[in-house]
Image (cartoon, rainbow, N blue to C red):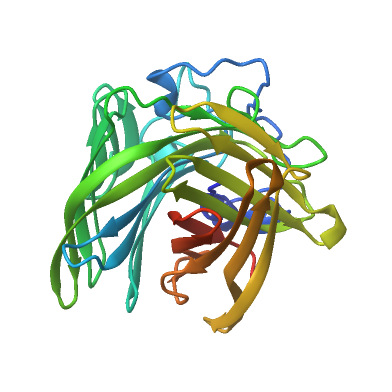
Length: 355
């Protein structure tokens, strides 16, 4: 779900609210707008920011290979969070703006996982999003391109890495609206977000590791999501999968874990090669950890089994690098995975709330 989904960290640091749910994502949304099941998403406007909602993210992950067939993963994320409600008709500017921005970047190989973080105050030009042309930025990190997001360029860097990537669809790839026309329910109590994806990017570019530059190409998946209270107060974290199969089919699935394991909430989307979407409930599929490893002092499930009987899917999901720990203000696991079993492919896995 791609959090997806940690920009609320800044809200926790600076507000007086008591955090509820993982990273405060279950905190009451008083004064903020709430997702509306009757709202129709409109593009390119909804590629931009929604300052009347409390939290939002632009989140691209990529599975890449070099000329020798070695696998890599990239994450580029921009989060927005509001310290208090902001009127979209007359948004406050300068230091009076309640908007705060946070960027996360990750670069992964079988032997290295590197991460970096940026923090910015809204209203002073240090971070933000525009739609025509599209530009999402924080400091010198950028995702920029066409207003319809059919082509974008990515750049991010940390102390010991950087990457520059060009991503493009074939021009006909549809946006994927999760849930009910982009209204994605996250709990039995009805918490929800607006959530859509563009999972059809072809990517090429350069990864700069401490040991040198690597030319790569592969596939990318962009997630867009905004809400004001996407979790219930007893949800402690999630496991989120974006999988791309050699058949051309795709699967987005997430499991939101509760303090009472019997009350976990799951949902997903099965995406056909042409972009048709089948909504999945927690009765349609299962996701279970198979193997754990000690990562950053935590027991992290780095191998999973996923079954979807209606699609004759039974696969094992394995981390390219088990140590794909994002050492950021709110830490979590995020990295590329390999898919084996009834279907073969690649994807990304995000896991939060493993303390």
